[in-house]
Image (cartoon, rainbow, N blue to C red; front, side, top):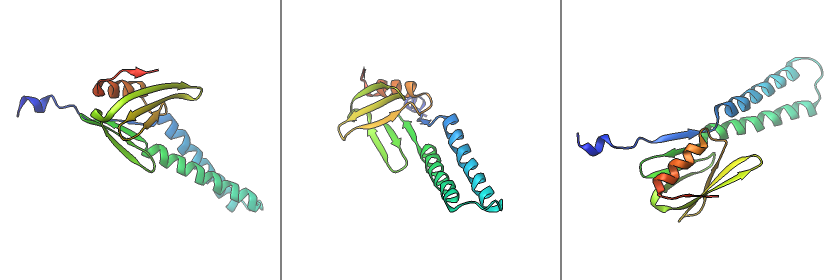
Length: 144
């Protein structure tokens, strides 16, 4: 085995906060139980109540799927941001700068690249360390 093989950097994946994923999944489960109670309870549930339960089940199911799919993976040569709909792979050589934008609801990170912006926010576990990894591997400094 060559010396360069042992120095290879393993990819690290950052996911949405575990507590956030658990809360959203719990809310989804709660609304499923409410719907079952409305349908089987014999209490004469109104169509509006049943529709409301279906609405919240759809809402929390989509949110749960979104947070389960949301990941940012930092490898030796690139960063991959995977969202519910899309996946962006950006080579560190293509990163121009990283903007750190504090806000009322948390911190947002804007990665400016030659191919357009890519973003993530403080919903990710260890987001500050993730930002530092990207900045270090791209040879940049954070813009505040």
